[in-house]
Image 1 (cartoon, rainbow, N blue to C red):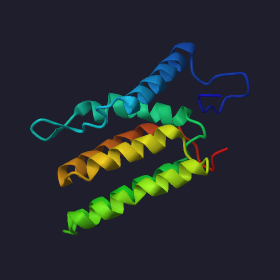
Image 2: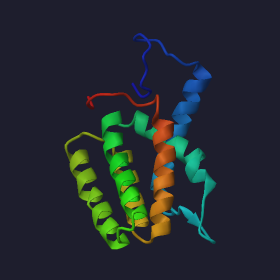
Image 3: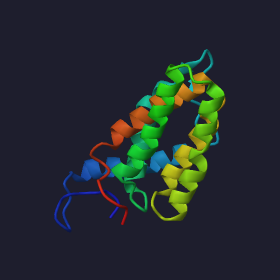
Length: 165
């Protein structure tokens, strides 16, 4: 089953049109991750690209919800929480080089979770590509935080509690 539903077996809790839109969004999310320019979070002039907070974030959330194994809320919260702690450390004047070291540690962690079949490939790719971009500067890191916030918000109601099956 691609869409995580609470409906009885054989039934959907969304109409056919909405179901098709979710399938299309998930497919676009996977395409975004495979785009060589992803993530180009900051446009020229150091402004965050609005698509990363809206369309792309929604598509990525749909891809995570339909990935195999299923991304759980606890897995998402673990990575998101670490990013938010790093953001708070940076705001308390912790040197950015320290943040870079901690941020880079997420790449082997996400690799291990993927190797243990705990997270979908789409989420692994999301973390790896965004960490690689975020270590470039404080501005890129802050853009990643905003992007991850939007993705996490769009994941609400689409991913479930508990361990991946």
